[in-house]
Length: 241
Image (cartoon, rainbow, N blue to C red; front, top):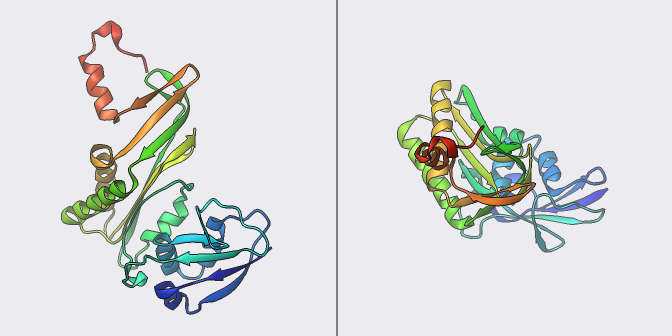
C-alpha cells in the first residue's frame, strides 16, 4: 500500500523534506512505518520518539493500522527547540514496546556498552496464576519522574544516552511492560544505571498495576512492599511461591 508522510518544523529540517511517499505491506502500523523511515538515520528514531502522530488529521497511537492512501504526519513538540538535540527519552505509552527501537535510541558512538533491561508480564505472582496485568499511569507526572530518574543517573554515573519507556493499559503474559536502555563508555556503569532505574521506578513513578487471576483481581504495590508484608505475616499465613 502507498501512504504519504508529512514532516513539520524541526523534524522537517532533520528529514530534509516536508513530504515523502512510502510503500508498506498491507497491515502495516504507524510503528512499522517509523521503523522503515528511520532505517537509514538513527537520529530520526530519537526525533520520532518525541513526536505525536496523526493519520488523516486525527491523533493516533503507534499501533494504529494504516490503510492505502493514508496521510501520516509527525507532530514535533510545539514548545520549540531543536528535535535534533533530543538526547534522552522518558515516556509512558499504550503502544507495544520494542527493544530494537530502544537500542537505536540510546546508540552513541562515544559509548562502548549498551545495557537493556526488559520487564515482562509473568504468568504467576503471589502464589496465583496471572492471566494479564492492567497498568494505570498518571501520565504527565510519570514522565516527569522518569526524567528525574534520568537526572539522578547522570549525577551518579558517566553515561551516554538514556531511554526509559513504560507501558500502560492492558498487557498479556509475555508482553514487555518497561524497557530501560543505557549507553555508557563502560559496561559496569551501564549495568548499574539500569538496575538503579528499575528500582527507582518502583519507588517514585506514579504507575499502578492490577493483576488479573482466574478467580479475581487485585491492585498491587511494588515487589519490595510485598516482600516486606510477607515478612510480617505469621508463618502459616505466608503464600507459597
